[in-house]
Image (cartoon, rainbow, N blue to C red; front, side, top):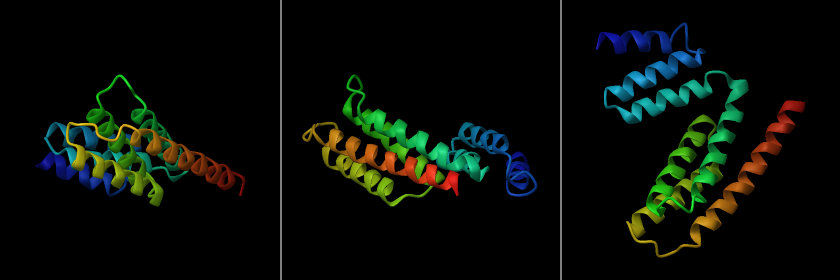
Length: 146
């Protein structure tokens, strides 16, 4: 559409460093039923200002860890929410440990379906992700001092 072409011209041109434009583009794409493209635009909004990207990635990582611990939420939903947060964290700032955690969640989702056969896995993933988050925070603090 012409609206999409205009958004793209701005988002990948003179306003590429403007986070709000990427958010608006993401909203437009989401309303058009293009969820994957919308998530890509949202990711670009968090990456638009490199100085903020690491903080955003840490926030999404933290939210992913917290989602795994939501005991009131059914396990399949918990895993899906955690995976979405971790995927956004990895999109913003790629990280091997986060990618491994995403792969582990996908494996559990694929093998379990709606049945929970390994209730302890959420705790293991959560602890591994907490360690990764602490490491990312330490790396970020070092970067800020350099």
